Length: 260
Ligand code: GLP
Image 1 (tube, rainbow, N blue to C red):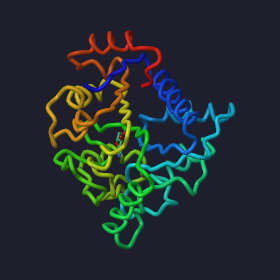
Image 2: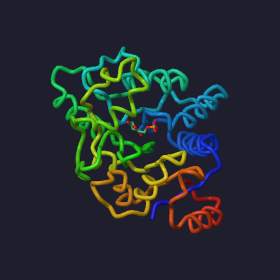
Image 3: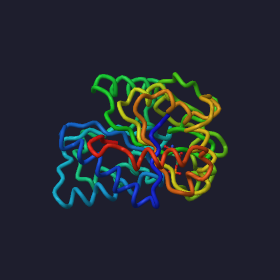
Image 4: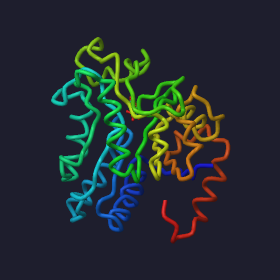
């Protein structure tokens, strides 16, 4: 079962996860971090940015983001390339040449997706992958029904996801219909997965991902196949977990020397 840590706030989660990433960078300057977009990981980035200001050198790390809209140039403010630039690359003072996003503006998106998957593998893979999850249990842009063995590819966005993401566009019709997303199989190759979720609206998806049956209906449930997963949720997002008392007990009893 995934280690599940129940915290009091997204801020506490950000401090915990950023602390772990900082420790790992201390051990390995050229760590590869997988980043997610969306509001969920922002406190992790904020806490890392604070550490960067205090002297943590992140310039040696490489970053791979999970997904990108098809048809949006990297300069478009709603593109994930732009979001990663403003939320991650700039505040963390990363080397931009080491920060990668699928090329959503490529003339051949299928080829761009395959090239991105190859690049991740050939670069040695992702050490720590940060993940959010959708209300419907989607992981990156792997919507319900996605193959649990899938690799990076072009996918069609569901109406629900387009609606949820319309807030980032001036006109809801401007939300692209397709994306390039790392596949579930690609994500599962990262060495350590850290899944974050906050708020009551995520509670059903969290319970299904952590304790439900492993099913393509809930792509996030594929985390149960991974040997090293940390789920960090607040009380509201944890509300539907059946074994929350066990998780709290295990976390309180965790040996101090054992990292996340
Ligand atoms: C988006 C992204 C996912 C993200 C999810 C949740 O569509 N493609 O990577 O995890 O939806 O977003 P949020 O964190 O804003 O709830």
